[in-house]
Image 1 (cartoon, rainbow, N blue to C red):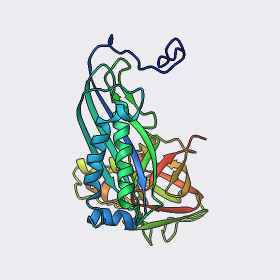
Image 2: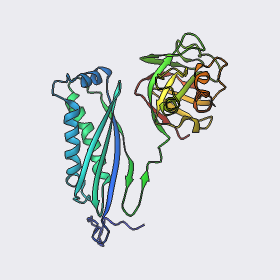
Image 3: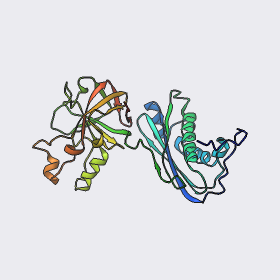
Image 4: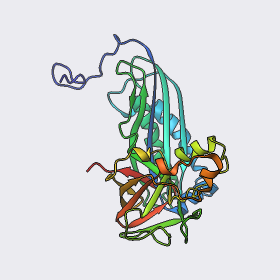
Length: 304
């Protein structure tokens, strides 16, 4: 393999890209900064002493994208035609997404990655007085379009998701209601939930994407827990995960034990629209290692 960033003397060089064609290019990157709930709450309220945290982080990310060639030695100084950042605030974390555009001979992955990293560092700087235990992780390229290498999409597209809601009920066969924290116990499931026990269907999961399909069928008012799911998720195609798949959710470790189940006879959703998504797209899991799960926690598929 030729090392293109070294000259014939073995010294670093910037690659000559003059022979490459100009193409329209776009890249999207992401990262996560974890924090105490109190810190996230203050950011939402706008009560951090240094000012509007996300507005400053937004500007920092844009500036970082424009200055990437000044920070990373072998990056070319390219003409950036657009940069945008988005923030998703959860109970104990903020997800940062950055997209950057150019029309040129090279780029633009590093610009989007640099934007994410600097936005996260800016959040840390503005909040460190009240939370020095903040942690930045999962900096990654999600997607890149254009250029000689063509379209790239991260291979972990069905390996990382997040928790939208934790739901429990004291009785079976009823709608579950949200709780702030789910305590997951080995040989049981979620503490306080009627479906817990020493069996294979300890915890049920259903994705927001599946719920949206039912909304489109004429049930626009569906809420999390209406399908009696314990965990409402986003970002994972749950029903494509093989039985035996091991994943982390919050601080717990889980194993997929079943895909779907037959609706009970009194399923109100099926009676109303003639179909229910839970039998085909809901999944069940058991707890391998106890822990806690909250809204906004990451779900990560483990490669074992």
